Image (cartoon, rainbow, N blue to C red; front, side, top):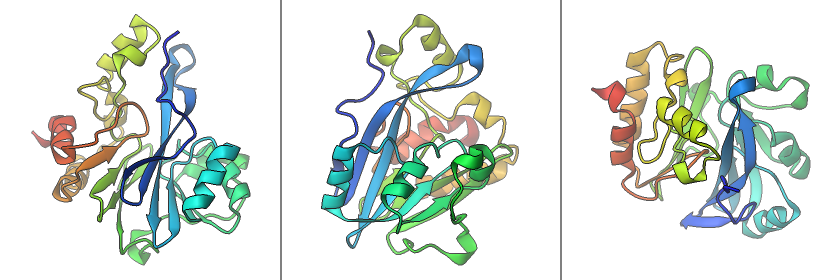
Length: 244
């Protein structure tokens, strides 16, 4: 059976100074007759001993111990409306951490998130501003909040680029769907259905140009193969449909 995940799972993987990823379990997402397997991935950034947790995945006992060994969990971030499922578990495990949710997460999550949270507001600034730039990008369906860790030149995306590898897909049909959707490695990009929800193309283009201007070395994605090098070039490739 094809392994669509990126083992070892639920364990810290260092990718730069003070930056880790965690590859999580498989989920299935999409319309009822077109649900496809999605690998999951979270990112952790350490700032002076405090941890920034982006799009948390399954919290196993082993991972919780590893997290405690590298710092104190300070911020837990749900970066768009469909990346929230495991946040309640992390909130229970780390009750002193502030939970930041992108707009409309509560609408999507319903009663699953019934505790106090903060909506990222660029006008008020963020407690991590010294090391991490924050860029909310609003669309009709959802806002994705993009982050850039300046010291390591790491850009942290969620669904703005998806990049599924054919050998990790369970069927030829999934290979066809990912190619049609514009999310097949090595040419992963913003899913075509998501593109249609960003009607203000000028604002989206400006956001992408800002990301390119940061000149990231690496780009972390939540789903599929991420980019460990040549980050700015990968952005230009993935968004050529918008920048042309």
